[in-house]
Length: 114
Length: 112
Image (cartoon, rainbow over all chains, first blue to last red):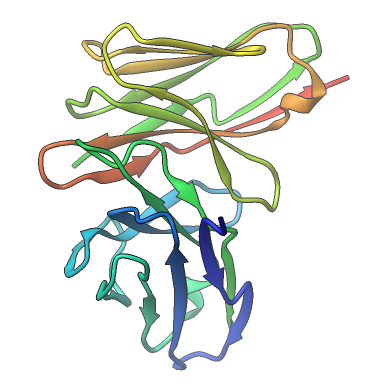
């Protein structure tokens, strides 16, 4: 199984550009999450989803948008990129009867905004 | 708002020594997770603690959970260089939201 797949692995954006970070999982997990990790720091929750059609804001949602039209895909959209969005972005998924239990992480997307 | 704090943030220790990493969280939760992250890599799950008093052990690492104190510990026994990594605890908030919040992380360096 591929698990959680993120694309691209690296990207450089100019200020004001937009892009979509892709995340796909093939484990039929209900729960999916987007985090950002700034250098030397912890993970901050951007958005999450408990199932197709349901999304909610995390700790740092400003400047981002998400959608969840299928169980497998959870893309993260950056509009009007700013240098403060330079970070490593991780997508994760989980499953469980009463919650997501341990998360399975993708390999991350390293984004630089200049 | 759920806050998850770890201490210490940085830990440099000699091989063979014991140490404990602490994870405090601010809201009621019966579920706590520990992850490991190697430099430049993604996160991998170490332990899942699902009830008060839960204890899990894997090799030189042992994790425990006290939900009444809202405290989890990750104990390292006789550290070896291969344990050098950043360790994160995380809490998910049951009750309809399933927010999954990570602690600040503890960067561990084991010196030979």
